[in-house]
Length: 97
Image 1: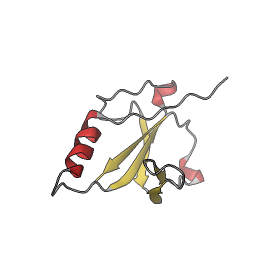
Image 2: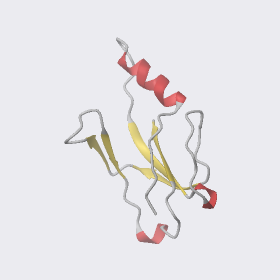
Image 3: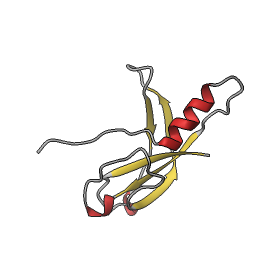
Image 4: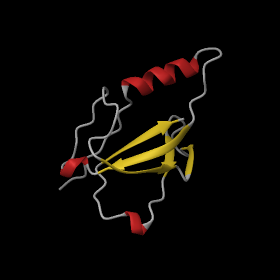
């Protein structure tokens, strides 16, 4: 079985990114990640989504940085303590303040 994953920028996220690039635009501060189990199945992300299918945990990012190899990629790191686990991660979302 092959691994299936993809990244989708939501409509709301794309609008915030576009506004941030304008002169005097508001900086985007990605600071929270939510993870979900997709309600028991692998969801098909959609740009119109405003929330995860089935969020199971949300927390402040441990670290966010620019990818060393691809300058147009970001790396968002979230640490999930073992006592929080017990679910399959099938979806995630990055949120700004």
